[in-house]
Length: 48
Image (tube, rainbow, N blue to C red; front, side, top):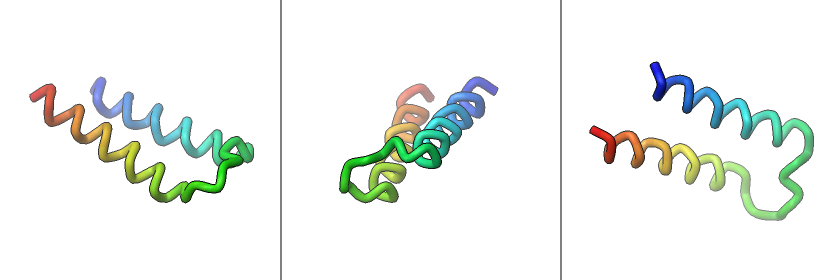
């Protein structure tokens, strides 16, 4: 349950910031999102 909540917070926060225009830098948002998810998944594997 905790892992699901953490993922929801990450995705919601990313979407909220993006929809508000909060990512003003030129870096690709898809790359950033992929890195965020990979970081999350890596952390899950380390906790097992």
